[in-house]
Length: 252
Length: 241
Image (tube, rainbow over all chains, first blue to last red; front, side, top):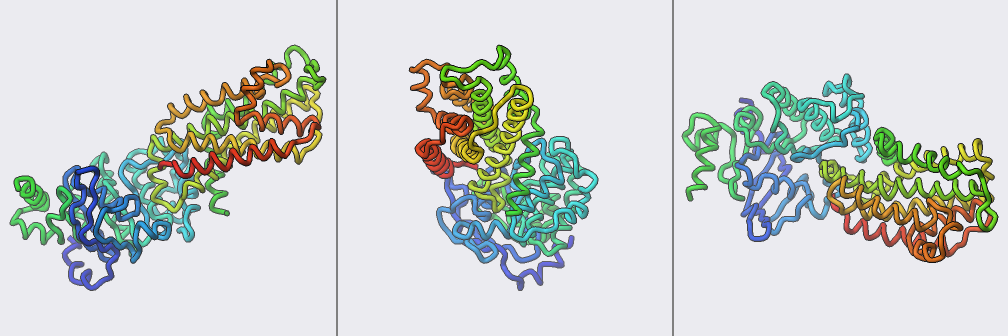
């Protein structure tokens, strides 16, 4: 995988996200219990973990949607809470289950989202590049799952971001559409945009991620390249490495 | 500015594309006009010809429907369907969202009102407005004050269906009592007294005064400004994505 060859140089790159000892609780439940990680420029960084592990909370804190209870957090050199407006100009995101109005057409959605940013991409060019031009006048409700995801990715890019968050982008897609979406995510990296990919599919993490963090019960239980995680656990695949990692914390 | 115009343009298209809101804002008021004037254009108590009361009051009916029923339903449906959740991770602010929604729904009401006035002029011998600036100012402030209340409803109600129920529950008593559906002259004194307490009453009063030459009272306009500031301010504070 491309991830392996990228490890060496990624260490010397600038940090896009720096998280230290991040804590967030809902009532008495600790969703994040001291999470630390670093995402480098230009990589696809995976966040994996079982349901309820704290993945979504982590992404929501990093995009300024939630206020952490403790720890430090810098995204693109900004404090997501205090500099939220400036940060939102520079990131793109597709969060879980987010949607568009049924009646909006593909072209209209891109045009409208472009209008929300100070320095947007040319939405018509983006529409062409992502193969959406033929579907310009199709309503959101009439798009298949794969085309919806393609539109979501284009919308995440329309503000010309330096960093994009994609939360469970391929959940519910058929295998062919998932593979196509993987190609699209690699295309994002090719543009020099850093990608944070939340997933619970290990084949996806193995195929796409330069590095990933496995999170369970609010802790980072392992962080590294897919190859490193496999080596660390002595497993024969990332899927088994992941199962070992998340099992161990469950038994503890 | 170009940005918000793009957003308004798309939102307006979405509003017109929805057959229900298009029907209620464009066709339904015309049907009401026809029903009201079936018996002929008789003068009301006080001498105003029926059509000169009916068209101005129905323009308030239209803007009330667009801003108190359709606007909150749109916003709440956006919340229910997680459209707002997606918008939340863009630079869009609640104030901008409100501005765009208000402009789109007010433009819908402008279309409905223009249609009413046109049919009134051509088909029913409607007199022109005594003070066009007065009517425009009164109508716009009506749109703003009712829109702020609509935004307040849409700021917190979780689903589109609930917002429609609440919106209609607020709208219908208001139009009945404030003289937007039945001319104020035909209401009993007690009904009018209750109606005057509703935020739609100053809009009806001011638009009709501007139309028939009674002169728009600054106090009435001031009440609408106050409603806009208070309801809009509370809405922005309570707004949930």
